[in-house]
Length: 112
Image: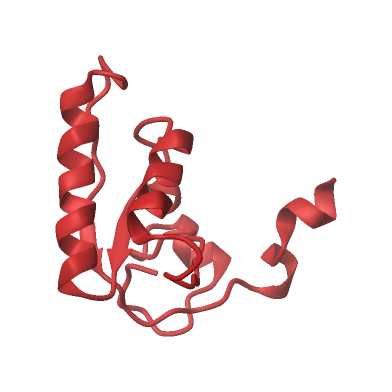
């Protein structure tokens, strides 16, 4: 997600077409809040990535998610937890979703 090219391939993503390898999280707010999902995100965040297809971002679907996500980015930066690296996590509107090619689906299941 994040790019403008229709039907991106792994190769085009790696070459910097603007898309990013991403995980789409579908959730039931009655079971877990968006804020709890953001907390999980920051628990695994390790700093800026070296390759364009691995850039960190938070894609949002509405204004409430945008507000919470932007606040979480500010809190992460202010926490000092990731110093000396800057927290570079843009909050962007969710765009068209493209599934990865079959060879890249459920990758952890395939390598474990």
